[in-house]
Amino acid sequence: MGSKQTQLNTSLTLKQCAEVFRVGAQKARGVGSMLGGAAAKVMGNDQSGYFTPTDDSPFSSLDDNPPDFMVGVFVPKFGGGGQGNGTAVHMYVWDRGTTRSVELYAPHGLTGGMHARKLITKVADAFNAADPHVRVVAG
Image 1 (cartoon, rainbow, N blue to C red):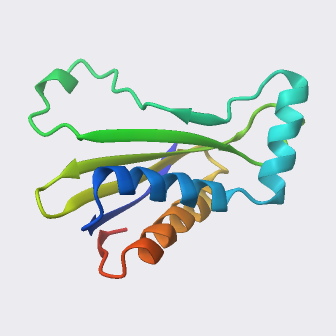
Image 2 (cartoon, rainbow, N blue to C red):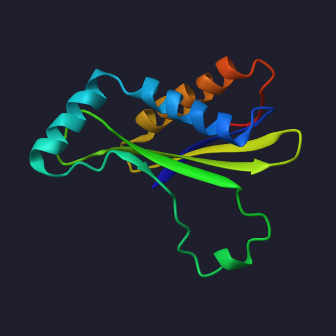
Image 3 (cartoon, one colour):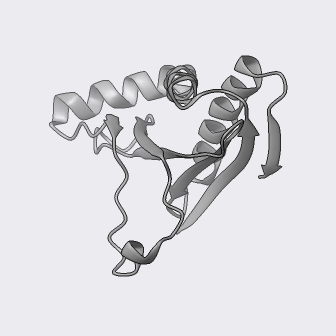
């Protein structure tokens, strides 16, 4: 199990960050994603859509800096016979007053690294388009 991630700082508001994430996730869905999602729906394994990421760690209640907003989306990919395979992309946003700290995170299995990187890149590109002064911190 691995993950791809990017951290950036932006002057966009929390609501604008949410909209940029939605647009970026939509742009990340290629033909393979559409076909994979359709096959998963037919087979009754559709997991696509938005969700709120959860932290099941027993130590999460000790987090003294929880995100102000978080969202995830599952993006299916083609293949797997409609088994609902794909990658989830999470966005965590911390409001720092005049800027927002954004972390994009995509956990993946053994063979999902390329798909995860593509999704993170597409969402990060949406932030670059929405805020020309966005600053990539890591990733």
